[in-house]
Length: 176
Image (tube, rainbow, N blue to C red; front, top):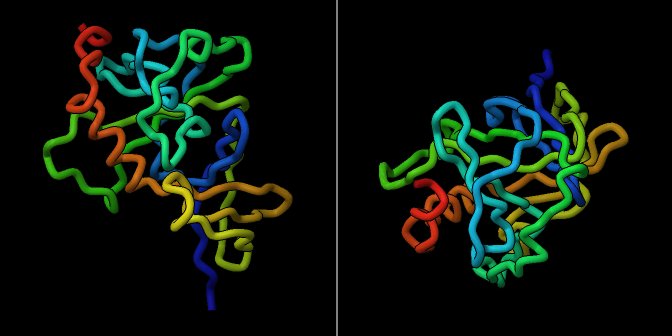
């Protein structure tokens, strides 16, 4: 019997690692400063123009399930650019379908290092904690070899991303 393997990337965020199938990652690019304006959610660094498409740049660590729309202060908005080395561009996978009302086919996250590629089988992953009911960002924490990582709840994250233009008035100031 052959064991099925899934190519995955371990993405090192500022405070945590996340694990995603490689099909969910469109590209890894060097860090670039996004367009921004005051009074945006603290989890949103701004909007990037990537290949002619405006996409949100998100800090997953700043999303709090009960305080998702808290606004950032000016000192929160000024992150240290020397600490950001890369950006991962995430795409909508076939499992996360669009209803046609979304503005974004992609969003991006800040990485502190280069991702690691893993070829994972069911025997190669150990569940550490399950979070789906207590944290809207993550489904579970897993251990892959010697690395711990969180599996994000991409459906919840995409709902937040899709709501950005309709819920925030500053959107036009950034992209125009």
